[in-house]
Image (cartoon, rainbow, N blue to C red; front, side):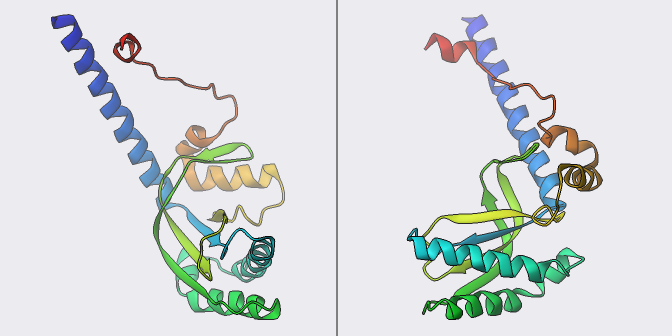
Length: 184
């Protein structure tokens, strides 16, 4: 009986440690990141196509921003750009832009992964915002880099020692198993 209690206690401590580390890492990563998140009105082909056009125009505007603060100060500009594209394409609905901390799932990019967590993001909602979405990392400007080498340099500069944690290079898949769970 004591052995089972010790196994359960050890499992709980390990789980708590892993969750705490994951949350701490996510918090550290979110301090250096601003994501852009565009949500389509619906999943109709037309709504999805206009989402991509809005994305392209918004990213063009964001290229000139040098700081995260500039992004947050230009939410009206993003709405104007989105509304202009929507109008040109014949859509009657409008957009809404907001900046804040939003939940994101784990996202795998070419060569690295960002763990799920809360990240600073500009969210642009098109119409009812009930369709599939698109997102990328704005700061560092991964949406706009051309090659893997440039991307890696930006990530190493931004995340320092945490780059090795998010990098998939040479990483082994880890599976955490609990013997007590297997018994049940």
